[in-house]
Image 1 (cartoon, helix red, strand yellow):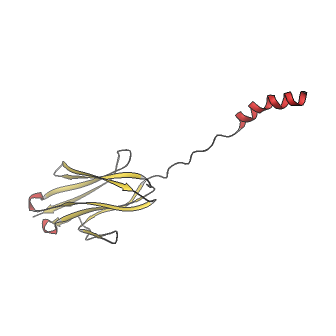
Image 2 (cartoon, rainbow, N blue to C red):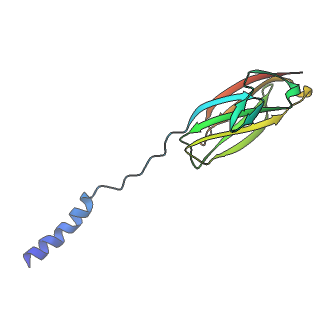
Image 3 (spheres, rainbow, N blue to C red):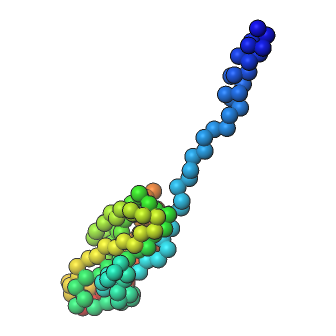
Length: 133
């Protein structure tokens, strides 16, 4: 009888002594590469640069992200300091190449930048370029 009483007395102590289940931390989201160019072929940027003529018709912001599976980033486009677009981009895999683009023309000449925004709202990378007529 004493053995049963001792065993029952130890059960709550054993339950407390068990280590808590560990949570697996999400890998840090990192912008491994980001560039501006005139196209994307086979998930790679084409015509990278920092100065473009409006005759290219489209400008792409291409981003390679690691550690971001099942999260979202955004490309926020600015022209001459004014926000002109925000594009949300889902990250499907641990390493993802994703992009957004803007149609351009002579009327959109100026100083441009694209901010790559992380899931928590912080700026991960800023890319600047100029567009001329």
